[in-house]
Image (cartoon, rainbow over all chains, first blue to last red; front, side, top):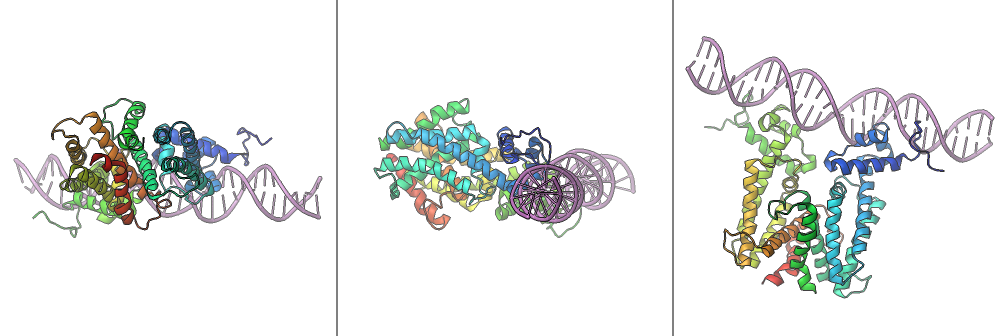
Length: 209
Length: 209
DNA sequence: CGCAGAATCTTTACACTGTAAAGATAACAA
DNA sequence: TTGTTATCTTTACAGTGTAAAGATTCTGCG
């Protein structure tokens, strides 16, 4: 019976921590990282402006929890994309999933790579980051013919950072509308589903397959 | 005799516009984009807090001029890198130059891709962006065997966006210290000069050459 | 039960921020 | 000289994050 709901308007909210995380995440989704405000988060949660700071130690503490959420979701998608097909297919699918995540959660995505806004060594963040990372590494290990727990060899390392960089850059450029003028596609969806796979094919798969 | 210097402490500064741009650029270099402040810029220029807004219409106006500076510098470097060697060599060199620019000017670089902070259709920005863009396009056209003024074919377009994405992503990940834990290189310089070319080779050049 | 002590949230306060509006000053043109 | 205009300052306001201190409720222990 830990569900006291928010109706109880006393000093003790019950589960204000979770409420704040959800409110902040929703605010991030609505207004983006630049529209995010700690006070507005508190307002939406129906508490005083200073309440979030008390729970999370400051803006960075709250944002770090949301970034961890983001890495969890990203890890889930990367894992899912890394389950079917040849090793090359899986890496390609993971690249697409990476960009898809960025398009689906632009606020979270931007936040996840703003180390000036995050508490880097928070366990929740480190663990979630590790999960996402491992999903990619596993696929590259398979491509390189290495066993699952091994250290990546030099070329594998280059491949991993390469696919990561390409997907990461494409995601950023898409979110920043930089690709609109060149590839005059319509929606981001169309761009993602046709252009990005083409790029991966042009760069990668022909060499791997 | 347009040089009245800043010593003249009157209402009319003389060339406050340029002074503000330089002060803002220096502040950006020192404290990064997140440490940038319009008031601090005014402070360094020795003028009132509201003076910058009057000249540039607001923060975005001033930042846009600095972003234009950034694109100019980037265009210069890309042009220089695209002058010697085979077409494949030049594209690789341009990729390295792109990342090098980001490492040398992190503040400017971040700013240049923050469309929420810039006035997109400011001529100075559009023109500088175009110059940088053209330098890359020219190299890809050469690789594709197309004439200089032509429209890129589909595969060339994919190549262009591909190399851009890879360099852009690598630059972002480097600046965000995300690569430190994987490729345990020392400095950013070392990473740039050895790791990034390796990636390009692994991904690209073997196919092009 | 009663009641310290701790946990939780609020209040207050402060130093910032960007910028709109109105005032002061200097340059300039007639 | 005198009016006009451009340039910069002053003032003011609505925001922001958060430190410090106060109010309230929960909790554990006698």
